[in-house]
Image (cartoon, rainbow, N blue to C red; front, side):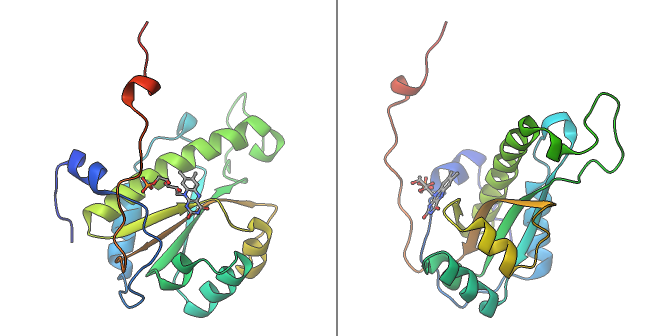
Length: 185
Ligand SMILES: Cc1cc2nc3c(=O)[nH]c(=O)nc-3n(C[C@H](O)[C@H](O)[C@H](O)COP(=O)(O)O)c2cc1C
């Protein structure tokens, strides 16, 4: 259920949470709604190469946690969502585009940008629904592909996001002063 907070409040309240209550389950309809909002994100050339795998199984998550050094996010969250780049996304070749994105390293870099957009929208939508999240790149991509039985040639794991109710509340990270980050010309 959305809290319908102003977007700025949601952005201010989102913090990475690494310990979840271990009991909350998220209904598929709600997860679909969160991901539907996430996939409204823009993508380069509107190619939409990102796919999401929602991993709920406790047994599978235990295997993934072991492969990742037993991170508590994986086992205590309601689910973890693996965002991947579908290298065969271009089902219908477009003029002047490579037949397969695999051929072009630039496309992989752009897919990572696309992934960030989707994941950020997912985390904000989740926060709006009262859930906490944690984005992670620190996992063994090859082990994940193996455990999840993913076609490694086709699907490139990019980002893992845990989602659930916090056991330990997140707190505002230290942020650099805006003056150190922004300049005007
Ligand atoms: C691309 C990316 C990768 C990250 N990878 C990890 C990770 O592997 N493990 C982890 O615990 N946190 C990871 N984080 C979370 C960051 O540590 C966290 O976002 C940062 O410290 C700021 O805190 P906040 O999310 O509470 O604002 C990652 C964040 C981003 C954006």
